[in-house]
Image (cartoon, rainbow over all chains, first blue to last red; front, side):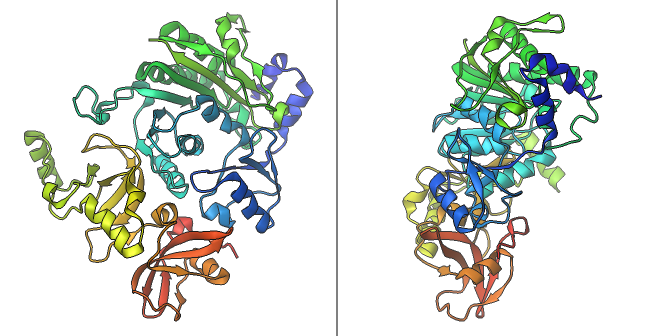
Length: 312
Length: 184
């Protein structure tokens, strides 16, 4: 079943939405400023005759004219990383500071994780977790190629993530007892990746949406619990289903000590607010502070992103 | 054998005198603090980079050093409790516990921007060959044998490419298979 029709009532322009979902995505790279400035990376691409366009909302995010950045010198040097344009949002929303302790609950293969490392100037402690051991090697490979040295890689179920390996409840001076910030870029039904993976929806079922929503709630709740009061948690998915987005936020603010906070999307990047009603369900009005991104708005994949503050 | 040792660990707590390949241990600062036989010290690692490649010791001021596996040394930008059972900790910088320590490609790219010794400069074609993983004759090198930093002029500055093993007039590329590319 193709579920995209479900969301027609939510979008401003149904035809533009559906036709954008049918178009392939441009190839996009992010400049890794751990190793090079955006200016040098662009100059290196110019020198190799690789055509690109700088996105109008971020100087370090470049749309390439042709597929694949892999066979260029700036890529080999770790100056560039292939990353879907819209997936740069959650790290910007989390906005980590150098020296902080940051948790990425579902990190592999590491595009957003390495972007967090870059925003932290490769300092502090960035814990990249994934429950899939097989995907951790991709995370490590990407991080090392990009010169990331502040990353700790762990392999746990994020829903009951343990801080024991970090010395919780001991008097060791290096103990990590709580995170300053956490990113929950949750596993999801991936409806928004249809432009990248045309078969993304082949196995879509409502049952899967409901079961993955349970996992999402568990991970987001654990992220809030393990983040210090005053700390920030960002929740994101690459799907449109309100069951996996607003409903998950509604559950978290009901059950845990946290609240949604305002976050302005980058200038020139169009988003719409979260929705408060869906198929007979009503959500807390605060979920309007979340951002929905539809493919026809910025010619990207679909996305959802919300920022929360831990209150106690 | 590993079962026996696990049993001993369970009974006695962690045996701190042995190198355990399954976890990260912070390197001792100096030889006086060394408990595990054969484990390099922080001081030795910093000195080795300085003596072999001229990497300024302060390059490492913000990093802690760890061993996991036999002689695999990692540099981490923060600090954590030690020992630690995590899957990865910072960036693998070198292989020690062997006669000639071997730096990693990623370490050389990340930390050898200011290297002054044992750096071999490659021209365009040589650099392409190196990144493809090929060995090549390089008679002009008259410095030390062993592991060299391979570098080239790139975007108006010197940029480290990786690690070459120089022996008998030949530079062997050690760029790992997963990083090799045809850039020509």
